[in-house]
Image 1: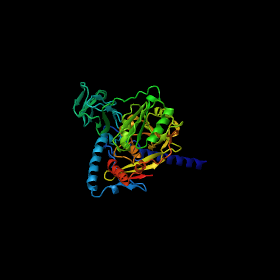
Image 2: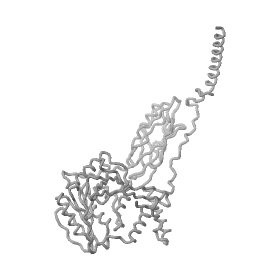
Image 3: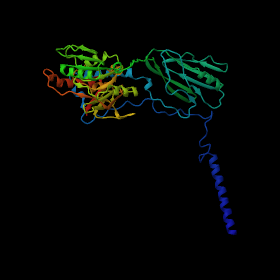
Image 4: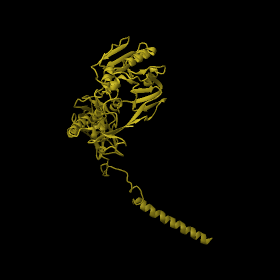
Length: 480
C-alpha cells in the first residue's frame, strides 16, 4: 500500500512539473500561445499584402487540332509581310475597343478594415454618383486617415464637420481625416464619383487606402441604352418573318412558297434574288428584292434580314419544303421561354445538323485556333430535354432579328459560307437546336445553268481561309 502511495505521489509531482514547463513555454510564445500569434494592434507594423499580379500573362500560342489548316500557308508569300503588319495594327485597334481597365484582375485583401463595392458600381458618363458601401472598420485610434484615388474622374464629399478635415475635394485624389470613426464614415458615405471624359463604355479603378491597407475596386462608366422592343402582336404573322435567298432556282422557290402558304397563309416572306436572269415573284405578303447579279450568298442574306420588322426571323433555303412538322409556333414558344437564346435551329428532313465551335485566342502574333466540331453540343437546354445548346445550326433556324442584324453576314463570302456567321457571332449569339420541329428538303434536280455555280472554285475556298487569317485573327482552323 505504501509503495502504491509513493508511486502515485511521484507521478503527480512529475505531472505538475510538466504542466509548469508547458505553461512557461506557452506564455513566452514557444508553443503557439498568445505571443506566438499576437492579435493585431495599432502598435503592430503591418507589411503590405503580397498580392498576385493584377494582370494574368498574355496567353501563349494555341494548339491546332489534328488535321487543322495553317492559314498563313494560304497567304501569298509576296504579300505576307505587309499583310501581317496590317493584321497586327487592326488587332491592336480591336483590343483598344474591346478591352478596358474593367478587364483587370482584382484581389480582395485578407483581414482588411476597408469596406467598398467589389462589383456592380456603374455610373453614367460625367454624372455625379455616390459610391455605395464605403466605410472603415478599425480599432480605436486617436486619429483616422483614409484616401481615395481615381484616374478618369474626380471625387467629392460633403463639407466636413468640425472634427474632420478633407483635402482634394473635386480632384482625382481625396483625403479625409478625423478623430471620430463615426464622422469619418459619414464623410465616406457621401463620397461621389464623376467621370471627366465622355465614353459610352469604359471604366476606372478606384484605390482606397488606410494606413498599410489598400483596396482597389472597379467603376463601370456606361451610357445607358434605351431598349429596342418588338410588339409581338396577337398571332404568328406579327411575330415572325420568313426570309430566303435565291439564285437561278425559281422552280424550287415556287414549291417552297406554295408549301408555306399551305400552313401559313398570311405570314410575310422576304426574298433576296441575285439571279442573272430574273423572274417576277408576286403574291400577297411577299417582298421580292432584285439584287445586282451574282452578288452572293451572304450579301443576299444581309439584304433580306435588313427588311425584317418583326421580332423573329425564320431563315430557310429556297429548296426547303414546309411540312406538318414545320411548327414555327413551337420555336417561338422556346425562344420566348428562354429569352437568353438568340438562334434556335431544327431538323432538315430526318437529320439534325449542328456543331460546336472550340476557340482558343492564342498569342497576339500568331492568332487563335478554331475547331468546328460537327454534332458537337454542350448540354440540353434547361426545361427542354429535346433541345441542346450548341454553337451553330443548319440553314433552318428562328432567330431574334436584332441579334442577327448585330452580327450580320459578311458579303465577302459569296458561295462558300454558313458556319462563318456563327464564327462571327461566337461569344455574342446563344444558339440551340431542337429535334421536335423540322422542315423538308426538296429532291435534288440538276437545273441547267445552276449546277456550274453549285460547286465553288478552289479560289473561293482559299479566299475564305485568307479572310479567316486576317479578319478573325486565326492561326489555324479545322472543320471536323
